[in-house]
Image (tube, rainbow, N blue to C red; front, side, top):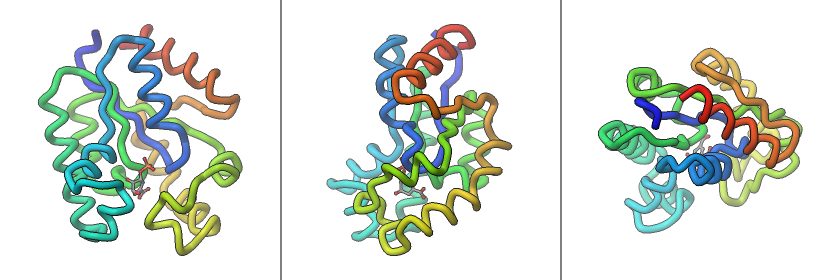
Length: 169
Ligand code: S3P
């Protein structure tokens, strides 16, 4: 059992949630997803939450979810792609755990991201995904304690992350 949380960060569509959930099952660790927590607090999806309350409220709720989770026993926590842009969130993650970047190549993200489920990207399309990627990639890389490349398929990424969690935490 690790003594600190494992925060998964990375772009939308990099695989944080699906990998986190699966690796938690493989390793017997609890799993949480800040997007899911915020969405549930609004009684719908992340999309609904954005539409109903706007991004500012979403961002505050996201920080609130992170703070809540720090009080729980160590787990794998998948964070929303934009959470790292808030210095407070970066501070929380650094203080309470290790930060693992799921680093997926932009071309792969672009080829299968579901724009309709991404409120902030829907209007700008793939060009907006690319802009956001370029805006954030250095922040992700600088913040990460460990970088896991997700460029050889889902199963390889599950294998790599599972081994990492077992061996390093
Ligand atoms: C966002 C990423 C989403 C979600 C929200 C905003 C972002 O999470 O928090 O739509 O700004 O990148 P995922 O990265 O889990 O899709």
